[in-house]
Amino acid sequence: MRYAYLVLFFFLVTAISVLGFRGSTTTRPPLEIFPDMDHQAKYKPQAESAFFADKRTDRPSPAGSVAFGRTAIQSDGNFLAADDHMYRGTQADGTYARGFPSSITVDGKLLERGQLKYTIYCAPCHGAIGDGNGITKQYGMGATPTYHDERLRNIPEGDIYHTITAGKNNMLSYADKLEPADRWAVVAYVRALQRAQTGTVADVPSSHKSELGLK
Amino acid sequence: MSKLFPKSVNKLPLQILIFIGLTASIVAAGITYYATPKYSRVGYAPVQPVPFNHALHAGHLGMDCRYCHSNVEKSGHSNVPTAQTCMNCHNQIKTDSPLLAPVRESYASGNPVPWVKIHKAPDYVYFNHSVHVARGVSCVECHGKINEMEVVHHAKPLSMGWCLECHREPEKFVRDPKLVTNLDWKHPGGTAAQIEEGKKFVHDWNIQPPQSCSGCHR
Image (cartoon, rainbow over all chains, first blue to last red; front, top):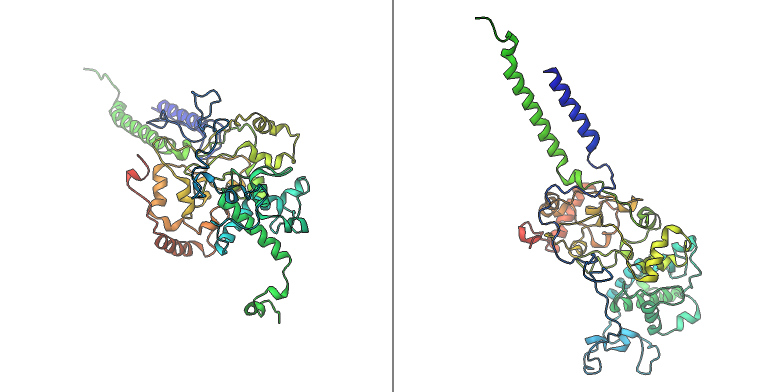
């Protein structure tokens, strides 16, 4: 009987040394004891496809795709992105538009949205106040321009929108991260940052002056 | 008639029973301990084609999770970033690093970087990232402290029982949606304050996490 216990003990020690403990890191994929229907013959986002030559389940738009019927429906600017000001930042003559598109209401909500998106996507390089001193500067990012010079204060809103959409110089496009409405929110927030840098005592509402120790 | 067996054999059936009982309980304990996602999934840390360091990017640099996983608020699927996302910075930073070669190649060719997926829900589970993020379930609740992981590992079991822990008592976990990507955040008032505020969120936003099968399985 003693031998039986020794054998059991031996198996126990072997099993624990092979299997380890819960939570220990491993590069081996998880064991699937009962695979059930874990893997079904269907496509999931960003998954691999055995059918297409480039193995991508997410299909890119075929080359040369255009928005269908863009000129036919002019009454609704959002339909098929027909509103040039909203979706391209341009006016009828192709130059960059000043001001915001008619479908965008510039209010506190838009600025809050802009602040959120600016903090996520822009601040790493442009800095929290738009001075070009983001965290990436310490790691060798090339000179990021400050928003607070005459040229950038005076460029049309449509130009800022276009920079977000298409990128400029070393900055790549952020069109995949910011949808058009969010791009306009960021434009509004950039304008707010620029305005903040030229603020004076006269801008502070009289009701808040005492909080700041102003007269 | 002489004795065929010595007297000690009388105890043998009992000894065998005890031995079988002990063996069975060890096997049962072993299955309980090992045959669960707490063992099989937790700790999975595959070797990635690029040794991307979350502790550096999300922790030290303080980048928001959504910089790269940009669709998480809009889509059921939280996307793995495109190579262009990496190139936003790495077209100027560490441009010669051999570790980033797969990213540069992917950016040039358009073929995706073959990242290895770590957190996999079975195909019969319809998990939606956006609804969870929009209602203040932080990334950390399911993925652990990614901002401290140099190599990401599977931190939580993602088993059904584990999902239900939160679906049954969401007030213990929900927070202000503005704080979902702040992985270090804990309610400053401790557990009691978290539950109190959580109950308010659950009421105000009408959070009704499904506990029926069809909530997640279709």
